[in-house]
Image: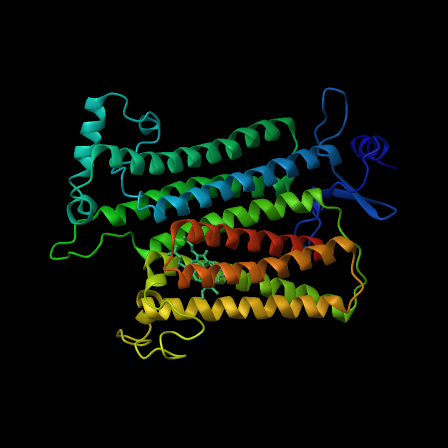
Length: 406
Ligand code: HEM
């Protein structure tokens, strides 16, 4: 006999699966599973009920949560693009302190602007690079950074407020609660990382007349954690929204799934290596393709000592690695496409793989153009956004190929 709350889920005509329960391989003991044709309807013992007596979470609430998370990933994408443009316009070091609430109001009067400008003048970027900057020019770089920080706060609110609301309404099951808490924690961590990164560009380095720039390690961590937040939100949202495909458990399907996972990881790694290229301005050391200058393997590839240091600190090696990883990603995606072409797959999975392949070629073309044209801001920003688009298609492919928990 069905428990009352579970019966409600089934009887209330939830179309398709209640999909928030399929994460991980283990089904919590507290759950009852009922198979209805192709879909799996799951309810928890003693799950909450709405005012109309409907048990939650259910298919409808899962759809709401799914859309919210996909929307949140869109906001993260906006933050990544804005962050890239902020960096490329060299605006990121214009706000020299950090206050969660106070800085939300930008300077209003002439006196406030002058005070803000004179604070900026104490730091190396002004002293070494921008000593002839006017107040009007300062206002531009200030507003760029301010816009990025405000967007970050908007992202934070977009995660935290609905989390509180949905939690109270009982829209999350146990595993979902852990997930959204993790995502909210991640947003907070992302903000802290951002300030930690900016601080590295504000430090006075006596005896150094180099262009002040943030640490490439911190830039890669900041971008990498934004991409992780994006991927986790999108994945969770998509698995709630997309009905799972039914695959036969054949060897080829298992191989395809494994292949797709590896390819997704490679794309992620390539994007991360791009952050090192950006952080070291390594896009300006060799502006030719496919060779680096006259050579396939440049002779300053291992110029730094110890050797390991070259991987993250030598601009030549960092650019070389990014090229190799990018070409490996392209080869893997092309391989995935050819492998999948011979298989009978659901239409949506085929479309997702096709989109991933088309985007991979576009992204490589964008990268090469960025390099050959000496990193112009609009092209570099498009290349950066292209990496998120590529990641999006990779996650879509994985969501289409995912295994249904038994
Ligand atoms: C799968 C393919 C690729 C992915 C996912 C990818 C990803 C990225 C990412 C995420 C960045 C950092 C952008 C930023 O933070 O502003 C970047 C930078 C860069 N990439 Fe790629 N990339 C790919 C292919 C290529 C290729 C084939 C080239 C050229 C041979 C290239 C050249 C560059 C350059 C020059 C930069 C530095 C741009 C700057 O300073 O803003 N990329 N890439």
